[in-house]
Length: 356
Ligand SMILES: *Cc1c(COP(=O)(O)O)cnc(C)c1O
Image (cartoon, rainbow, N blue to C red; front, top):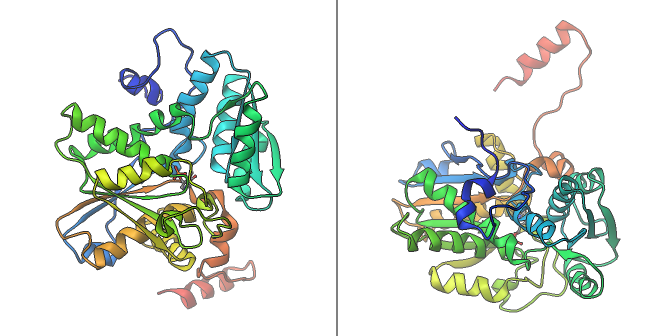
């Protein structure tokens, strides 16, 4: 058996990568598709709900799928530096792939508004971290302006190679299920990922690998929900910092996905998002970051209302790993923490007292 060597090797003929090129990879992709089996809303109904655990990519988010292609192309084209604006995960991924390639990374992040794990990742990989006094949308505007003047390659999802890499998640889902799901539920920030998944599903349908297409269901945080408002939002705010975006870069594309797939957008409050994150961890042992849980929270609500009907096959993307932001997890966890003396008697008593 040959070892897995990353998604460019796996899907090379479906990607804009030529044969001679040096591939910059950290063996991203090939993430597990896990069926939910303990959540009441799911087991009470005749539905199959799976989560695609993208938090198990090398830097802990789906961004690695796009970054391997974007950085491979940047290096092929002779670029010596990449740049991105980020709510955290893009910067972690860009920093790691730039380190792997031996080129520089500049990352613009909103000061004080990214999860600490993501900042640690960018710093450890040696990126130059520019903490701006402004949000992601301001950072994105600056990145576009500066890249027109300085010799740096933008690796945000406006870089078309990013979406090419990210479409492979849809390929993997179809291969794992032997078919396309009926509904694909996904968190939406810049809307690059929902666009990329639709590209992947369409490509496999066109080539006859799958017979059907899913309906694409995009979920936003209520405080950062431009697709629900129908226009850009200037001061997005949500606990789910990865989707704290008011001016989505793939606005038109996502509306087209919405129309073509006959899907929908919906919104969740911060409380609903955190409750879904906790539910997944407590019931299934799957730890994702808050933004990721919007997909499952949305799917469960739409199952309960029968908007997603009985008999359906549903896939929810878990975009990033829960370890990115342990603070938020510990703050909202209701797990018992008991301080005890370091004696057998005290530990035994604590066990007996807390047995459920
Ligand atoms: C980037 C990101 C998103 C949003 O993806 P878009 O392509 O911007 O819509 C959602 N969740 C996490 C964890 C992310 O890192």
